[in-house]
Length: 292
Length: 128
Image (cartoon, rainbow over all chains, first blue to last red; front, side):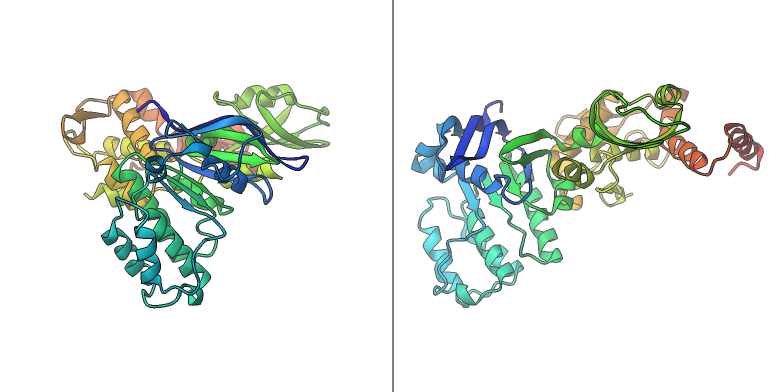
């Protein structure tokens, strides 16, 4: 499949004079599991909302399944699943009744799948939604979002209230879904460790701008930390190829670089008259480098 | 041998996951634990077992195929190809270990010559 499931072109969106999203362009394809990270207020939720037409762009456009995001027809909507932070569940309804209610909106509802999820996550069908724990409530919202077997799944911090076991189970489910058929899954999280294995792409937002849009494997491969210990005082800047950040303190320095080619340690050592250690950065360390 | 479980994937190591899978298969092949004709688990099996993105596993498998390590069979799992690896290929597999050794030696301020002597001595010792 060559067409993108989601295409974002030069999307900007303001709250008053504040840019919540600033000229974002990106694509999500079938098969992508994208981790969306950023600090609070970076624009993650706004971006997810804009992808389904819940926020309107000031400039630029979003196309989902070939249609403008703010004009999705019913058929396109049936192919999308959403879990947002503020769920829209009714507190007074028993779980089973809620499932029943939501199932009525979809022609392709998979009752067995939802029952199986609720059972395996031990969510009591007879309990009222308002009496569920935060974690159970989040799981119910996830189960409901999966009920119509969506091709596109947008999840805004879906695991924030889950305990580690439930989280691990949820992440395995996502991989299962991705193995079933080529779907597009975008989920935001602060738990970057969760992204290490299951995502193939990373979107990193900072103050409304998309700082990183890349394949997680390549990001890992290309980003390195150099620890430098020189015999004499280092210059104010080391000028290493692909430098993202450098901290220099007299004779020692720490430099984060991102390059496709492996840096030549001996060459750097000779040039700076220094000892150099080079290590790969994990995804979490990499995100922290960009976010801090 | 159950390869699905045998793969040891460390998500936090900083080494790309596809490379971890690739290197492990290479090692198992050169040590003879995987023989020509042995079949690899499917992309889905590996993805499910380790909760890894299937595209990542798929990339590892494609690279192995490009390297001539494995071959695709129509409608069947990938299998290990027959064929000798060159000395260079085998050396490349311990590149990361060498890097670590050199790094540790430098951190301990061991002169290069001393390290080389120590390695030579090891090499002359009893074969393990």
